[in-house]
Image (tube, rainbow, N blue to C red; front, top):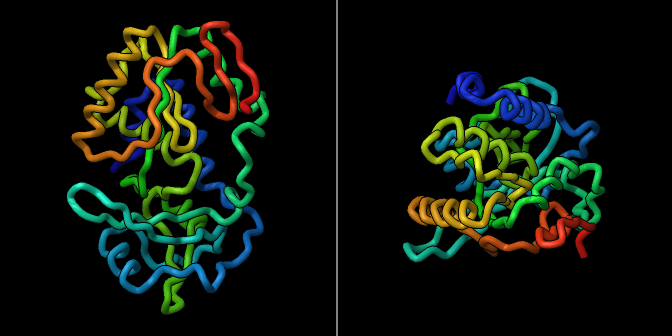
Length: 247
């Protein structure tokens, strides 16, 4: 995937947001503690991930950050599926409640309260098929059972910026799935919000869920065309046009 080519297809405001997120991926974690012995990739997972181009041997570049690798097995109607998650050690080390996020940090998400309604979708995903820039891979390293230092080659699940990066790239790659101008989309970690007129939000949310079902995407809680909800740690009331910190 040629990220620069995809950026050229984005609107200026979208490209600026993408660049901001992309810089975060390569920013490193400062002084990051080394990996813990109990958190290593098992041999079978390491072989499968390397064969799939998800991870590879670490380069000679200095390590900027470690991730905690772990696997979970998800039951599907077609059988079980293994999900592999790389959790950043430092950037997500302090898991604050969304309600503790300061309002000034989420100011860009607040104007939606003036719309008629919103839909909120909770995305459940593993890792994304977006190649990490070479300069960012040293930020996402882990250890295999045999002691080999590995680094991610793909955008990891467990990193807060990943879903929004994926959403922006998907909009550029498959423009036929891009939301119409009357529907706005916000992404925060694995939560997706669509907002606009009630008719537009209902219609587009149904289309999103249909396409997601065909693609076997796993969703959590879903709210469709609701005037009251929480997003980015903020309670939105579209009826009263008010916002407040979440409970």
